[in-house]
Image (cartoon, rainbow over all chains, first blue to last red; front, side):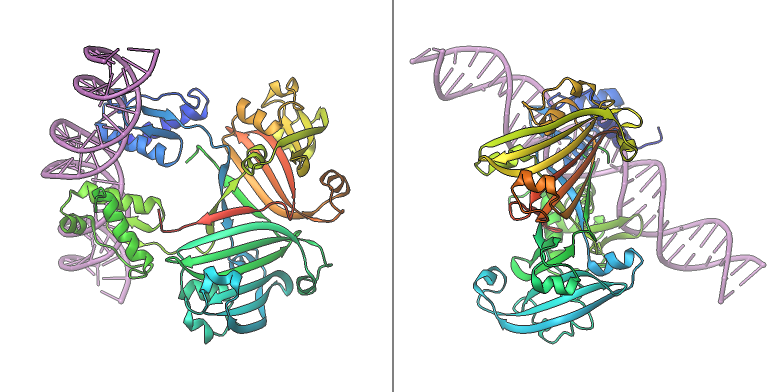
Length: 234
Length: 234
DNA sequence: CCTCGACTTATGTCTAGACATAATGATGCC
DNA sequence: GGCATCATTATGTCTAGACATAAGTCGAGG
């Protein structure tokens, strides 16, 4: 192989774990053994093993050695959370959006995490792909975290991209669920009331301070989220 | 700080990126500069920077240096894909399941990725939490990939955990969508037909060979998936 | 002005040492 | 047997060098 040594060690071990030759719990060679086997320095073996540990394939403990990790029961998958405009344009459709409502008001109790007792700006938007409704969005932005939002023209630029440019978030929580469309959403999405929709709730923070809270609702037959997970391959 | 040097360098830089002091595109100090600043060896500085690069905070190129990475528009989030039994028991409910149907048959055309022209075993199950329906599952297992499945007693052990123990997967694709309950599912889940449900489609492979294809359907008001993403904090 | 080298520089990889730290296993005492 | 103690060992971190490699920079020649 023309691979660099630590990558070769990594992929050799990875292959053995993948093939089932080394099952979860199996103890792998110590760094000193790898060092002898590959004729390299301990640091090089260490780098390979650290890489495997960082990817979750193995578990390392001082003195106890390195063992093949037990696969997590709750497997975690990487899901791509889309920016609606990018998503629509990526599918080759023309993107448009319409601001349905905009209101500045004091924060309510359930929004305490967002803005405390401060003021918020509340928006309602529909996103269109080739003129057809693609998603409905209700969003609240904290004016404490983003005071410039009060003067922003959200009819010209959707709040999502405006926020990305003005107050990048440092932490986010997404909640994915299914809901039946309520009467208002159904009208804007041109669906029968009660139709199954995918709802993406997103809360974001910037250094601990709440920035925005958004509910995006997609017609169930128009959209799905794909998550891929390769627990072993790089 | 009592932190180890390379972690301190990492978190110092991380803080500056987080705070917005160093915006995307900003060029960070070279390893030699960090080495002088922290009085450490170049390898130590390198380790810190590699760690940041592995987490996607910075981009490194030979000779060009290290710059703050541009945040991805399609942000990826880690979503926990649950094992139903674990999920139910984790909520403090009693888990039960009922096998509704079991059939061995040749693979259909849409299942070519799974079993080619081989045989498959098809299962239909309901999962219960404290006696109440929690999820409906339709699953197909390739008998090429898991021949022992033909003899397994899926009434005693749900297929999900049986597979986890017998043929661990190496690759998986999850698709999350919203669907209205069809008549059969609605009856088993005790829902009105058409009620919004969260559907989790999961396909798994073992070293390129298809293993199983499952559709799990959850009542929309009973379940949601939570994804957290902290692009910057460790 | 443009292009092709040669030079420089920042990262990538590697080595052969060193000391630190945590967990295991053995030992000896009660 | 049960328990405290100590030696051993595998990993964790670090250093001060080395050579390799990719990619900007700059100059010479057309």
